[in-house]
Length: 193
Image 1 (tube, rainbow, N blue to C red):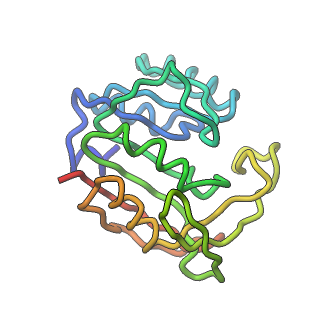
Image 2 (image 1 turned 30 degrees about the horizontal axis):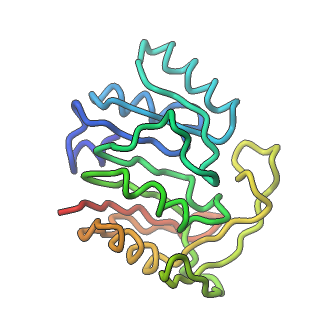
Image 3 (image 1 turned 120 degrees about the vertical axis):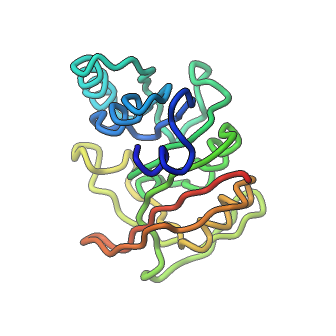
């Protein structure tokens, strides 16, 4: 919540949170004054987030949505900000996912994800966008820190920035670049102006 708040201000902003997991970020965003819609592809994470928010007397719209599928009608078509931490590297079609989310966002994006910069990559395209990626094998449905598909695409950071810019966020930059046990990870902040 801190980065989004310092970059854009959260008070009164409609925030879409991708992958609420257990609600830690959901609570932080709401306590900073955001109007949060949080989603997750695991029902158990939706329930955990609802319980955590209830414990802190937080009002948030917490819903189920598998991010690999089309946006359900119960999720609004417009948000000010996107909080997207720890989800993209679990998706089998991450560029398609971003193509479905980014047009919903009017002001800014916080995206934190593993990237394929230090890995052998392949090339794919989505709606004319060419991007480099590495396949990453997921651990299966049971572990809570795994994706919902057998494998995921980790995108090269340069191509991730290009994709975000393609969808209108011209001011997109990496604000943190770090090495973790599973590989390189970046935090990106982006705004439309």
